[in-house]
Amino acid sequence: MATGVKCPKCGLMQLPGPTCKSCRTPLGASSAAFSAERKPPVERKTPGNDPSPQAGQAHRMSFHGTGGSLFGIHIVNLFLTVVTLGLYYFWGKAKVRSYLLSQTELEGDRFAYHGTGKELLFGSLKAVLLVGLPLMVLNLVMGILVTSPIIEAIVKFLSSVLILAFLPVAIVGARRYRLSRTSWRGVRFSFRGGVREFVTLFLWGSLLSTVTLGLYYPIFDARRHGFLVSHSYLGNQPFSFDGRGKDLFGRYLLTLLLTLPTLGLCWVWFAARKQRYYWDHTAFGPARFHSTVTGGRLLGFSLGNMLLLIVTLGLGWPWVAARGIRFTFRYLTLEGSLDLASIQQEAQDASATGEGLANLLDAGFDLGI
Image (cartoon, rainbow, N blue to C red):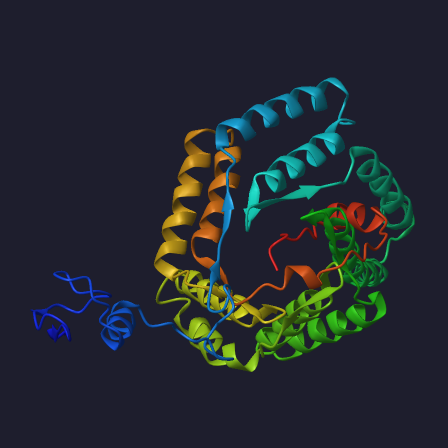
C-alpha cells in the first residue's frame, strides 16, 4: 500500500506522485517509486511452462447428417436399382458412402469419399469371375456327377476351405479400397498390410479357435484387429494398436459361463468392453482414442434400432445408420496433440476387386479405426 510523502519545498504531506500538488515541485525518487508501484508485474515465460495449445485436448468427431436426408437418398437408390434391374445398386452405394463421410467432421474439416459406382461394378464383376463362378461350377458339377455321400462331403469341405481362404483376401482388399477412397483435409487414407501375412494370421487363428473350442478367439480377434489398424495410414502417418487378446480372455471366459443364465445378454456387455479396450489401445501419433461406451447404453441403442426397423418394416434403416454414427461419436474422443503440419500426402492405389469379393462373401467392415 502506498504511503504519504513530504514535499521538500512546501513541506505538505500528500500521496505519491510526480510533482507536488501544491507547489508543483518535482518529488524526484517518489515519482519513480509511484510508477514502479503502479506498474503491473510482467510474467516471464520459461521453457516448459508454455504448453502446446493442444496438449491434453480432447478432439471429438461430429456427424451433421440426418435420417431424413439419408432416407431421400435411399428411396431414390431403391427406385433406380429396380428400374435398372439392379445395375444402379453400385452407384447408390457410392452415393450413400459419399453422404455419410461428407457429414462427418473432425477439427472443423469434413471427410470425403472418392469412390465411384463404376469402380464398384467392375470390382464385383472381377470377384464373381475369380471366385463366384468357380464355386458355382463346382456346386453344379457336384450336384450332377457326385452320387457318393462321402465324395459329396469331401467336395463340400473343399468348397468351405476355398471360401475360408478367400475371406481374408476379401477383408484386406475391401479395407485397402475403402481407405484409399477416403480423405480428410485433402489427404487420403491408405492400407498397406500384406495379403499373404494376413491370410496366414487369419487361417491359423481360425484353426486354433476351432481346435480350442473358441477359447483362442479373443487372442485371434485382437491380432486380426491389430493388423488391420496398425497397417492403416492417414497420408504418411500410421495408426497404431498395442492391445493384447489375453487382456480380454478373463472377461470372455466369464461371458461364456454366463451365456445361459443371462440368455445371451451378457455378450452386449462384453461387446462394449471390447470396444472400449480396442479404442483405448488405438493411437494416431501422440494422440490416443478413448471410448466410454457401456453395456447398458449399447443394449438400449440396439433395442431402439431393432424396434425402429420392426415398426417401419425396414424403411427406418436411414435413421438407424445415422443413429449408429452419432452413438459411436458420442462416447469416443481422440486425446492428445495432433501434429497436422507433419501429415503429408502419400496416396496408395487400390483396386475395387477386394470390395467386390467382400460383398460376394459378406465380409464387409466398418470404417471406424
